[in-house]
Length: 150
Image (cartoon, rainbow, N blue to C red; front, side, top):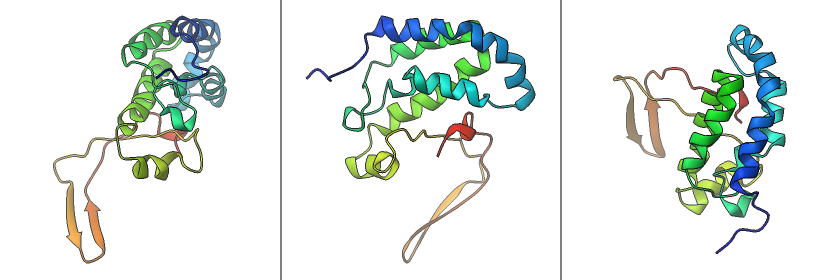
């Protein structure tokens, strides 16, 4: 089934390519901030680059994962940090898009533009059952792009 209003793959790559001069100009700022500048975040949103894996029922494009490699190659020509953060954050929508509709609704039901961050726990992470659910304890490392996420 084709999804309506999905930009062609080449158009999305062209949009990433068009961002290169601005990303290059902000690369040092991103390094100094230790996060993407707000303008870079807006550019990625306006270019619809975070919608590439978002489920169609939330306005996403549900495109193939290989597109991420092509987008990262272009974005990285301007700013390696932007390429990395975009790849990581967009991939979380791809992964979460495989969850149940109920789990997807918890993330995107009120805000289809919500972005997701994730982190890998260290060896001390534990989840323990309790009477009304679970208790999660442990230490997690950094989460690339967390400043962009809701």
